[in-house]
Amino acid sequence: MKRCIEDVYNEMDLTCETFPGDTEINPSAYVDASSTFKAGDVAIIFTPDDTHFDIAMECVRKGMHVMVTKPIVQTLDHHLQLAKLAEENNVLVGVEVHKRLGKLPFPAHCIPTTTTDIVCATAAFSLLTELCYSSIMAYSYM
Image 1 (cartoon, rainbow, N blue to C red):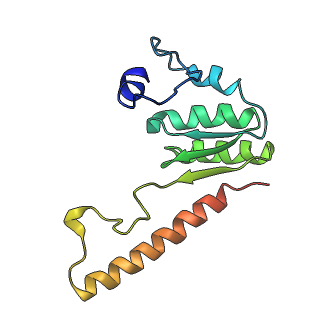
Image 2: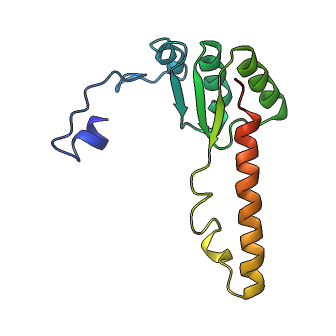
Image 3: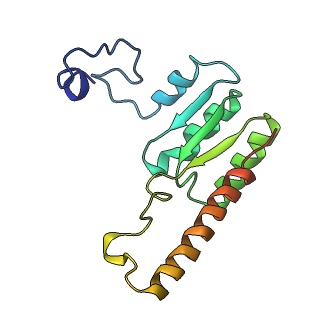
């Protein structure tokens, strides 16, 4: 953090506890980090895709609500396990879909150029928005 943030933004106070520490490598640091929170707190998970499931499960077990960047998990089995545990612990699990709901939810080479393309792109965007909303609702357990 010092090199990437503090050294770049001179006046910014970065006083905080990090997991793992700046000089450590610990793939299970999320276990220590989640133990510093209490039930009802929110975990926001922005880590490599293959780590989402383990971290989310750890946080949900501790009664934390979780927001995970897409994809929440990588397999149907993990999806079912996470949904079941969230329901059992009465917590919410949601998905964050950055770069998906902006003005251009398509790669630059796929930008619609004709009227037909624009109609199709609008329909696709509407469907995508509905699917994302449905996905969030499917993970909502209260």
